[in-house]
Image 1 (cartoon, rainbow over the protein chains, first blue to last red):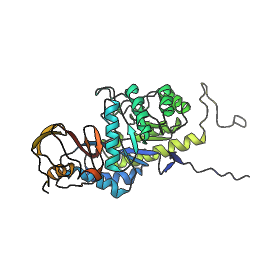
Image 2: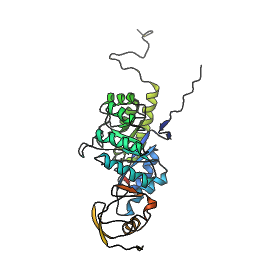
Image 3: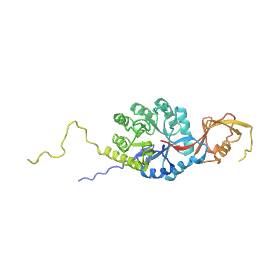
Image 4: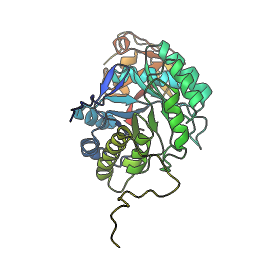
Length: 261
Length: 76
């Protein structure tokens, strides 16, 4: 019997090793008091926040809770409709939070929330030039993903289905194609509704999953945070284990020889 | 905090709203709005350019300036 040693299954983005393949969005949590138990249950590798105008320091409770938990923050540019807005929002986030990592979102309209990939590519190239570590939220198009990677993005984050829809991974083949198209980590972003969606994304070869609504708007956000952590772990393990090929006909797993009668 | 170089009354756009201020610096504006000249977790842009924290006391506002004051909130 030979002993094989499995190399550690590390997730490294832009030279930084992250502690988990589950990333968590905080948007939609009904109360800041849930931040601590949700983070404890999810143990996320990155936690996203948005940048918004403020008129009082009362909103500071979220940041304090995240700082106390010691999580790595990933500010987003959610809601930006142009490269110009997204770049300014990223610059503001870098100044406010002291991180040059950014989840780059440039949406095409406020109904579908689909990425505007033309503006996205512009913004990504600009932010890379400005020294940011850019993780763009994008479509499940492998050509766009490759363009983003070529522009210097540290990862690509294709959507499984529309933001907040909970429809899961609607086009598994496209996600596999994105994974095959780029040399950088692929993070499934948007559409995760429950643990099996996260597991499927990982089985398809994604390097991580980002979920927000699935956790924050679940009946029990803490329990769903744990479920997604386990789903990501299960999916990643299954991906490494190598699934059996699909077959159109049955194949007995019990021996046919020696049957009674 | 008093402005050592009080200017005439000017109107800026702060977070999308027309706002009357009496000259002063970015730090003075933050004191007026947030009770703190150097609040943590805050970033400020004037005219679409970020003003670094160290420059808040020295950066004077001018009539017509468009100012954004932002912080981190919940988001996906």
